[in-house]
Amino acid sequence: MKSAGAILVLILVLIPVPWLVRSDFWLNFAVLALYYGFLGQSWNILGGYGGQFSFGHAAFFGTGAYAGAVLQLQFGVNPWLALLLAGVAGGIVGAIVGGLSFRYGLRGSYFALVTLAFAEVLRILADSLGFTGAGVGLQIPLHPSPVNFQFAGKAGFYFVILALTALGLAVAWYIGHSRFGARLMAVRDSEDAAQALGVNVFRVKLAAIILSAVLMALGGAFYLQYFLYVDPEIAYGPAVSIAALLAPIVGGLGTMFGPLVGAVALQLLNEASESAIGAAPGLNLVLYGAALVLIIAFLPEGIAGIMRLRAGIWRRRLA
Amino acid sequence: MILALDRVAKRFGGVRAVSEVTFSVARREIVALIGPNGAGKTTLFSLVAGSLAPDAGTIRFEDRDVTGLAPHRIAALGLVRTFQTAQPFERLTVAQNIAVGAHLHLAARGAALQRAAEIAERVGLGKWLDRPARELNVAGRKRLELARALATEPRLLLLDEVMAGLNPTEVDAIVPTIFAIRDSGITVLLTEHVMRAVMRLSDRVLVLNNGRLIAQGKPADVAADPAVVEAYLGRGATPQVAGELAHG
Image (cartoon, rainbow over all chains, first blue to last red; front, side, top):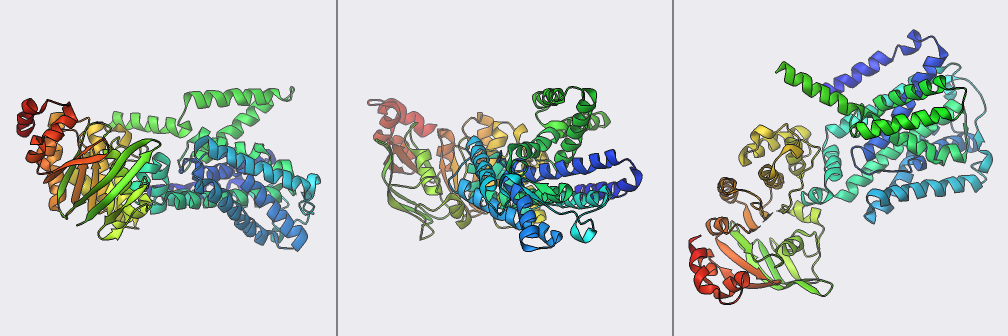
């Protein structure tokens, strides 16, 4: 219950940000940090709590983005409804990927490679099919209006991604406080033991990948509205798969706030390295990569790991 | 009969790990399955619990054919195993570990955690409830295996060497726990290397050697059986050892 209170407080604290932060740069920073945190939370559901490391979350992200675009452009669906349907489409792709790979017992690196392959196949399809705009991609015409899920300023998008963040945190909270979540974490730590205690491992993993894919697809549909454009590389390329797994790994795998903390840290690192050596394009990526290596080498439990360690020390001092 | 095996067989390539094994277990019995290393005890357990499917034969649990059923289905029917090498859910606390078992029949989180606390008390893990399972030592992990299995409310419990790796004091401490489990109405089938515990605990002993059942009966009778002593120690060892085993 304490953690539910923490979520509520965090969201309430974040609501007034657009009124306090007048700079467009920092509001954009906040939107992107929440956005990457949300993608990270999606990955965290399956990878952090479920121990199934996907390298192909782009498969769900891209499906969400393309579903949103195709529904609006080809079928004239309202973008808000398209957002919901994008989530459904992502869930279906998640069910297919999970159904096939978990049915055949793929684990560890085999599962990771299969997810990567699914994303690549979808990228190639999107690159060649007409209704996805092939290599050119799809552009959403500009009609700024809240009804169209298009906002004149960044504040509107900020509230949408904040709502999605709240949804992601609620899912993580549910996993920490439910039978489903208990079973998911049990499967992560030992499939054999979980099965021996009556857990249907296949069903639990399938539910987790569907849940994760729905969130990721919502992230894809959000991206589409924010940038009003999608192409095969953006949608199904490896960049977004990596972005989704980095935030929880840096912030703390299988923790509720880990993905958000990781996304904020990475976003700060990104901006800092860019402004430090902005003159030499590409060099900022080297700095970014070096920092990542250090984090992963020295903080295997992510930033949440330090906090837990600190909390332990404090508790001992107080006791 | 709560459990009945009829001519169960399993081979791995050319090796007959278990061949033509037939036996049954009555309600509220404590039956020990013993035998030298590699006799097929763990394989037999895996067959009964569904982790492996037999090549031949049938396994009946409470008069229901469970041959080849998936492990989680068998567990849901009330037949639950523990593992020889304890497999705690390392990143979960002791209470959360046990709750996974309790969730088999309790959907509500609160109810499962409460049940976990009761069971932890019963197996002597009460003080460890909120500690991560990875901090437990070997004896603690064995107790945790037991606790998780108990939390599923089984009617037949398969214990795979719950005493292996324990020191004599720890063995003496776990024996009453197992008696208490039986007295609560649960049938126990166990494999064990610690003969002292087998002699004290079991109503009946089954001896497996090279995948075959070579003897069964009361502990003292089995210990005196020349075929059993030979299986353990080789030909000609009977006279010296029979006495020791019987008094062990």
